[in-house]
Amino acid sequence: MSLGTVRVPLDSLEFPHRRQISFRVRERLGRVFRNLSKAGATEVRIPCTVEEGKFGQILARLGLSADQLRGTRGKGQKDLPLLTGVRLSCLYGDYLVAAAKGNKETSLIVHLFSADLLDPLLELISAISHEPQQSDGELYQKIVESYRRDEVTYALCMGSLTGPKERNMKMLLRPKNLPMVEALNSLFDIPAMMEQLRLGNIHKWLALHIDEQIINYQNHISVVWKEEICQGKKTIMQSLDIDSIRIVQFRMPTVCSGDADTIKRLFDNGTLFPRVTESSDRDMLRRNVLSLDMVIPSFETFQENMHYVGLAAKILIRHVVDELPLCKSSRKRSPTIFEVLSGS
Image (cartoon, rainbow, N blue to C red; front, side):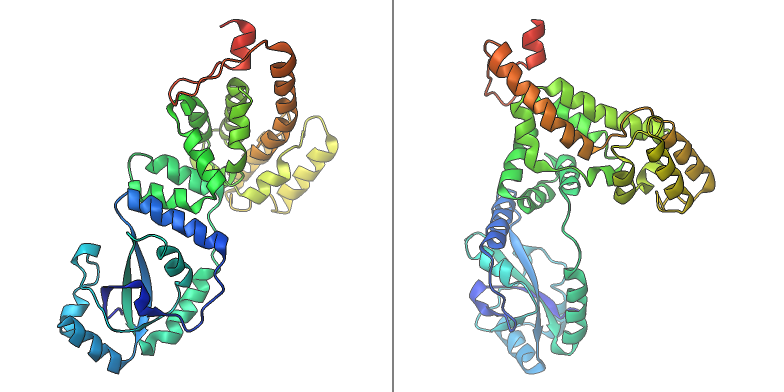
């Protein structure tokens, strides 16, 4: 149990197991803090351990009793006492502190724990540290859902992206790109599909001025998976897994007998969609996947198609379209190639 929570100066902390500080990680964390600062919620929270003798020193410096210090748990940043003149041993956070030093508006909040809890706390931190980073798709969904609703979540998720991906995301969120965002959002019901989203190429999509084709393909993915494969059952959509999607994507089961045989075998041995356990649901999925008379689409098939569609778009822009009017407004988009060629 935490002994209490206090604010401390950055130079009050020491790290027994200090790591080499990666410039890239520090730069990314610095952007997180800058984003949080804009949202008015800049703070860093780090756990520290204190021995019994030092705990008495802390209470004396703060002029608080142990019960009063415990009462600080859960309080907001502005209501926490400031502890100075005491060195604290941190369990982790050297990256955070290194990044925070570059942002003068960042305050540091530490949770104090008894040194007797050091070993179990280190085990817990070690377990958590192996958690994978959030995918682009996860971050995209959180950013879209928190945009203009939850500034702190928006700032944290934006800061978790690389610099180029953050710029791409801001570009995509401009009002003029709303139809494309809505098409992407239609796949929120299939979390496994969102795992394939890559934000690093968005600027390339937008530069091609083929919005209609991009939106149509996103809608195509949505219709095939949500309606034709899952028949609108959200419980099944939520149970799809990324590995199974990658196995069936690019396949044409009604055209290629080899694809059909592979899909049948992997359904029968439980490899495909193992999280869908109801026999009736599995039979439906098997039947629907095998009935598809097209290349089974996904974000990865979209990326592959964009290599070729992008070349065609560049040829049209260079050799067919006399001039493609550009509009730098965040609300009004430039005409697409289709609109210019059709005269609309």
